Length: 277
Image (cartoon, rainbow, N blue to C red; front, side):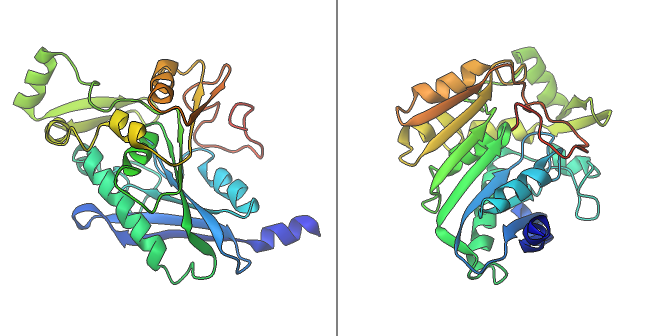
């Protein structure tokens, strides 16, 4: 009876479509306990080659909702998925034309939607909005705190400390500029995914906006950094950098954890992996 009651109370609003960067759609999911009580809101940002339904993200949403927190996750408008198929990278042109600024702008539009949503009236406390991101999404969450007074706190999982020092050698940059495209192999989907040269240009033109160190140093809200000690994708030193920039940032290291904290896609388990839990 108790389990039935909890399941009954958890409400899911999936694939809500709102306008994102350059008019491309953002798909939003909301999971919460429908009890007509204003609740804290957590907004989750997926990472590079990620999407809102990757791996255990849906189970994570339910886990937060059971703690009486409204959990909102979304697909960045240029992440390469489509509204018809949000689980696969069917729009590689969009993926190639994505950049950090578009994702920051998308996140603002999601916050706007939260504030104005009739569906969430009486269920959210707009003074308690937390940003939560994994990997690249954590970097976006940190950067957004420098632009948004609506953010109450921020959590970054396995996130890089610098978006601007990840570029290739001068020779590879020259080739990228000449051909306008470089390809990244996605081992899970077996796709060669394009990244157009606009990505590099956008980074160079927006160095101040994309400076994670500056954002963290200026941060005056609670900030939790979670990182696995055995992360091969984003090394632990990146989390240690972030911690060093603000004495009030709390660093939690999970011993033995990898970049996705033991999770995978598709995810078909009832329980969380040890490190994710």
